[in-house]
Length: 215
Image (cartoon, rainbow, N blue to C red; front, side, top):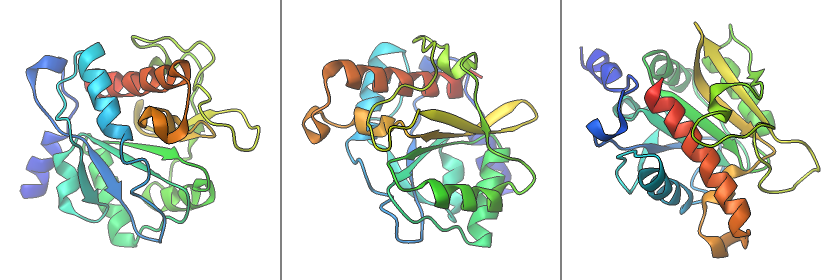
């Protein structure tokens, strides 16, 4: 019964101003730096609350993949540079959370890709990650990105790509690759990005939050 009630708390909310809610950083095992970009989410929250009318608590929580506490948060953000590992219990817990109405955003901070692709199969073995087209609503919210995911940091001269897990027409997991948008959310002095670059990153992040809480 507890899990059912928690799942219901994760169902997307209609109307930003009607609720105060909290989002969370996902802590995973495997040795990767799940704690990377500590100023990213607080800055994104402040920007979204000011510019698109969300009502998110300023400080995000931290929650472990295998914990039932993940059901308390409608949005989980996962990032890092290296190894990620989900046990079978953790994968099942994350699957139940996502199927129950939760949302996971994975932002590759460079180096996560082979691990993410392996571990997401444990969560959804029956569904492949698919690349999102530029016409997807996530690129066409308040802020328009006609070319899709913006490039924030350069690593391998590769194009930024957004992938998703879609079940019954619902995007429930977004994987942003070769973009490093979370770096653009961080304090300006961390990466010395221009204001224009940081603005693009924050606007894209706001589109993600807008999509989650209005669909």
